[in-house]
Image (cartoon, rainbow over all chains, first blue to last red; front, side, top):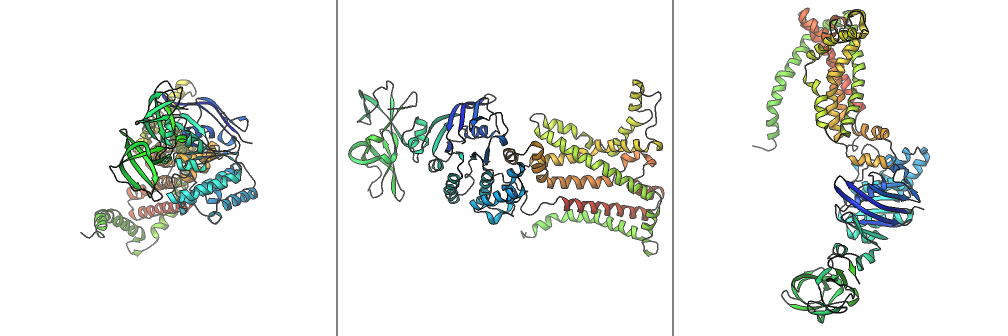
Amino acid sequence: MAEIQIKNVAKRFGEYQALSDINLTIADQEFMVLLGASGCGKSTLLRIICGLETATEGEVWIGGRRVDHLAPKDRGIAMVFQNYAVFPHLTVFENIGFGLRMQKQPNDEVKRRVERTAELMHIEQLLGRYSGELSGGQRQRVAVARALAMEPDVILMDEPLSNLDALLRLEMRAELKGVLAESNTTAIYVTHDQVEAMSLADRISVMHQGRIVQAATPVEVYRNPAERFVAGFIGNPPMNFLPANRADAGKWTVAGQTYDGPHAADGSVEFAIRPEDIAPAESGLPAKVRLIEPLGAHLLVTCDVDGTMFRAVLESDLELKTGEIINLAPHADRIRWFDKSTQQAVA
Amino acid sequence: MNARLLPYVLIAPVTAFLCVFFLYPFFLVAQQAFTTGNGFTMDNFREVVGYWKFPISMRNTFLLALAVVPIQLALSLLMATMVNKMKRGRDLVLYVWTIPLGISDLAAGIIWLAIFEQSGFLNSMLHGLGVVDQPTSFLSYQNLTVVFIAIMLAEIWRATAIMLVIIVAGIGLIPKEYYEAAEVFGASPWKRFVKVTLPLLRPSLQTALILRVVLAFEVFAVVAALGGSTFPVLMEQIYENQFLLQNSGTAAALALIVLAISIFFTLIILRALRVPKGATI
């Protein structure tokens, strides 16, 4: 059992507040992705969990044990680094067995575990080579095998796929998911790539300016963003936002159309809708077509609604011309509302 | 100009310079060593090797190299590790530590002579503290151990920095992620030094050791200043043959012997610290 609890963690580098008020519980064997743009603090949080960095405040618990005062090796963790950090002077075999050798495991145990994890990562034929003789993808596999060979309670990964080319990244992503699911370890995975996050995670923690903005399942984060930032960050193209004016109790006027919205909101709210939750209709938001990008399966149409840029993903057989004015109707149950002052979602 | 020829044209002046001022004199020295008035001979070598001071100077040179180089290696590794841990003032400390490099070896010898001689700092200090009744002569032939230690100290003081700068540069090239990986996978600071720093430092250690070992066999001015004739070394023998005995043939033979020793150790160091193909950073 390796549940991870992060309690009130904060980190300051001099004047700079890198993390504030981080509270997160990661269940045993859960795959948690920390997602955010660069500089949001996600790597710092990972380094605090693994012990390469010390939190200014707060506690880290792994498997019911407080670990923030322990050395990395005593935390029951293993890590995959962004640049792999595969030791150049050791063979693949000795790289995978490095942690086991440090634990002074007997030779035959090292051999057994190295060979087993090498097989799992399909690198058994590379065991005698040096990292200079490996491709990026193979080095990545060695780095993962080295972590798995430790049979850790928790495996931490810092942007492990970001240095691979696109095709290899897809392949490794699927493989990582399979291997980690079989290994029964808890995983924390840092990335700035939302597609990677969506496809791998049991839960995503979206981070922004040193805070966790939302921690939820990928579908929940996508469908019900807790903050305007999440709505704009997740999804490609991101969510559309339009200004709304209060018409009546629970009624809001958006670009001349009236929609059911939040009752309680006293300040002004914003209307939000995902580009794929829109369809052309008899009546709807009047949109002037600016740009049409055929993407094969869909058309990505950039329009102008009420003076605001608005994107819609529409059926590819639709015949549109730039400059044309069309009516776009949002699916009523997919409309979201955000408070303009607090940036929070309102129902 | 033909692009394939250009590189050769550009290195031609340097090559010509090296040929005229290094290769040609080298052949002259070799010629002097292997000839007397009547053609090829090994007489010069026989003469220098048979001379009573030769085994002593050979032994002294080796002993000195053996005593000084390992200490300098350990010291420079320690100093380089310390410097690399520093966040502020690192450059200043490096400058201070490399000051002895800017002093000629004879001057260094004289500085240490000023400390150890009969009216030197050490004697004045010991006398002032009441440890000794009257100044002692540390550097006399009766105190060979003290002479040896004085030369050792002077050599360590003078020439550790040359290894230090090479090693500092080498350590700077090792990516910090390797240390983090080693730490996460359970390596203690000492293990990280032995399992990460040392192996990844092999190219720099090679350069530093070759440079230092070759210089150790060429030690002369410091020894001459502190030991004089009580502590003969190989270079001093060359000087003696060339300028006191006016025998350039035997001096050339000795020079070739020193060269052979240097090449031998260079090859050993290259071999011992070689990095396998594909195992570089």
